[in-house]
Amino acid sequence: PVPIDDGGKEVVSKWITSIANDGQFFTDSNGREFQKRKRGDHNVFGPDQPNSDEPVSGNYYPVNSIFIEDTVHSFGCVVDRSQGGASLTDGTLELMIQRRTLYDDARGVGEPLNETDTGITPNPPYDNAERLGEGVIVKGHHRMIVGKGGSGASKMRGIMDSVFSQPHVFVASAPSGTAIPFQQATLSMLQSSLPDNIMVISFVAFGEENTYLIRLGHQYGPNEDTSLSRQVEIDLHKLFVNKNLTSVQEKTLSGNQMRADWEARRFQWDCTKGDYLLSRDNLHDGHVVLKPLEIRTYEIVLS
Image 1 (cartoon, rainbow, N blue to C red):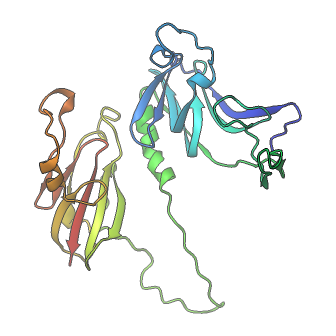
Image 2: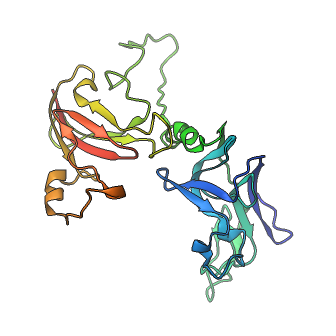
Image 3: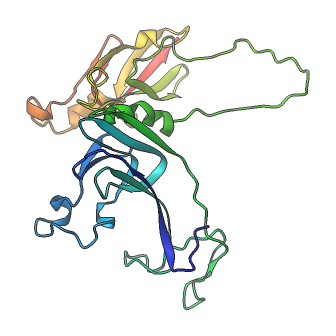
């Protein structure tokens, strides 16, 4: 546990590089689009406060991944759970691992950040809100990524989803010497590999027999990679092993209604020009097109 004899500590992991990032760093938004951050950003602190009274906490952001880059090198880190991250000086990245303090930080909770493994006695007037047990121990993994200049986002995308959606391992026991009648050494639901920038986010049985809900996601954002940031066309007919696609309909992201019905009811903004061009119906005879960072949901029937 983090010792608190001196009043407590905030423990961070810090990496120091030679990257000249000029106060800029990038954090992801819930594992999707990267947001550019600027240390001491007046849009955060206000135009009349160029130097915040909280230069450390005011420049921390919640992250699942974070990176810095210049024209020569890029450096980033992918975490296994949401943490606070920052680049408080040029060339550095740091991530908050654990906070254990004995004093309230005046953020509304009204108690110190002293989490323990047993619990706490009731609050006054019933007791004195005393922490019980030892301080909790925080463990985790930081995966560091190093790349060429300007390639930070592309490098991060290549590993983020493999970290956030790791394979589940299932095992079973059997008496020694028992012959296990495996029919095949490997199994895949896909007939062929998907493009390097496309992933199956979910594939679940849905409603009637042989009906499934499938979500496909484009893993890269615009201009993050010269080739992998391009839109991709996928033929759903060729995805499934020993199955024929008999029907497919696009649904909303949550899968609770047909997208065509939702489009007919929603307010129709003028999205025909500039950066506001939105993707409308992109389903044609089982062929779908995914643009950067798009997630599309389909109800399919297989036979």
